[in-house]
Image (cartoon, rainbow, N blue to C red; front, side):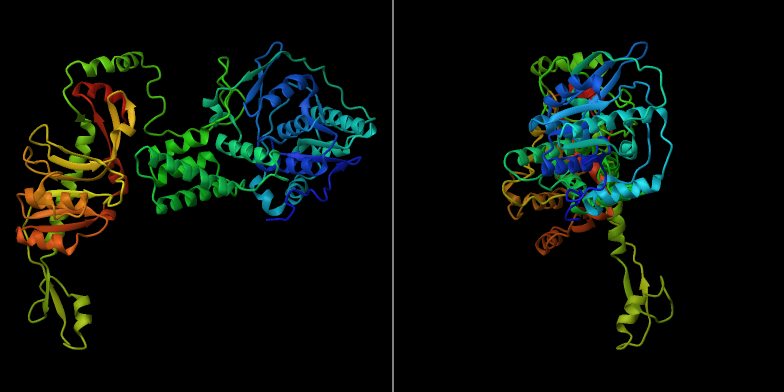
Length: 612
C-alpha cells in the first residue's frame, strides 16, 4: 500500500490554488480520499457538485446522517426525481465534514433534471489504496483523452469553476469535490467566457427530505449497509480523538468480516456455520466472478452468488441480512421505500431459498398464523415432524443401506498367488508388494458376501464438548410401516422459531432402524453406559436393535476399536462410510429439519417451509 495513497502531500489537479478532488459517487475509497484531504488541509470553503437550487434540503439531509434520507424533487410535467444522500459518497462526505467543522459549503452545480445518466466503465476503485488516488485518476484521464464536452457539461463545469474562483478571490482556502468525469472541464473552464446557451432548466418544486426505509437500503445504496456502517464507525473513531481515519476499511478485509459475521449469526441461531474449506471456496469463487467483470474485489451480489454455490441458500440469505442491517435508523413513520429503478440504477436478481417475505400477499395464511395460538391450546396432539423432510431422510437411509451393503461386499475379496487362473484379475498392488520375496504374480478373487444393513447411523458432529451444542435428545417412532424409528441429538429448536409452533433445528447425529415401533429410550438406557458420548450411544443402540448383521455408520472418522469388538461379540459388523463420500448438498438438506407443535400445523408449514 502507498504511504500516501490519497495524494494529500502533493495534489496535481488544482484551480487557482484550490484542490479539485475526483469522486466516484457512492464508492467508499473516494470518500476516504476526500476525508483525508479535508483533514489535512482544513479548508475554509468546500465546493461540492450539488445543484445550488437544492442546497438547503441537501444540507438538511446531510445533517441527518447517519440516518439516511432522500430528496424527492418535483419537476413540472415529469415524474419526481430522487437524490439519495449516501454516507459513502465523496460529495456527501465533503459537505458533512464542512458542517461538522464550521466550514462554508458551496453547492455550485446547476439543476438539470433532464441530464442523461452516464454508465462509463471505470477501473475498480478498490485499487486506490494500493496505487494511489493520483495515479488511478491520471490513468483514467489519459485513457479517456481529450473529449468534447456537451453543452450541458460545459454549463455545469463552468458554474462549478466560477464558484471556486469566487471563494479563492475572497481569500478562502478551498477544496472542490466533483465527479471524476468533470475534473478536466472544471480545471479548464474559463470563468469569463460564455457557453452554448440552453433552454432554461425547469426549477425544482416541492422538494422534500424524506427518511428512507432501512429494509430497502441493501438494494439502493452503492455500498452495502455493512460497508457504510464500517465507514460510520471509522468516522466516529476519528472524531472522538483519532488523528485520521483508521484503516480496517480495505474492501477485502470488510468482506471477510461480513462472511465471518454471517457465520457467527448462523451459529448463534443454533445452525452449523460453513466450514473453513467452504469459506475459502466462497472467497475464491467471488473473487473470480469479480475478475470476470474486470474488477479486483467482489461486490455484494457476487458474494451472495458465491455463498449460494459454496455453502447453500440459507447461508446466502444470512449474508444478505447481515450486509443489509443498518443500526442508525431514525424512527419515522413517513419513511419511504425506494427501489433501484426509482434512482435509475441497475439491479441484479438473486433467488434464494428459503425465500424472504414468503407471506406477502397471502391473506388467508396470515390469518391462519394469527390463530395458531388458539389452535395449539385446543387439544394439542404432541410434536411431530414435517412430512417432506421425512421423505428426504428415508431416502438418505435407503441410499446409505445400499452403499453400506456394497462396501461390505467389497470386503469379501482376497488375493491369492497365481496358479492356473487369473480369477477376477491381477492384483497389481499385492504383486509389487511381494515381488522381491515371492517373485510370483498375485490375483484377486471376489467372494460374494450377502448381508443386509439393519441400522443406519449418521454423525455430523460428535459434540463431546461442554456445554453441548446439540442438547436436544429425542426418540421418534415411525408413523407408518414404511417409516423408520429414529433417535437423534440436535440443536435446541426453541432457538429457531419460524412461526408459533413451528421451529427449526439441526441434527448433530441420528440413528434409523427397521422395522419401526421397536426403538426404546436409548438416551437413558443404562445398558449403553459403555458409550463415551452421544454419537457412540447411537452406534451402540444400532448394534443392539439391528435385526441384520450390518450397521452402516456415516461419520467423519471410523469407530474406535472397542466398538468394533462389541460388534463382533454381538454378531454384528460396523461398515464405515466416510461422511465426505455423500453429496454435501444432500447432507446439508437432511441436516436442517423442522419440528411442529401439532399435526394440524402441517398444512400451514407447507407454505412456510421450502421443500428440502
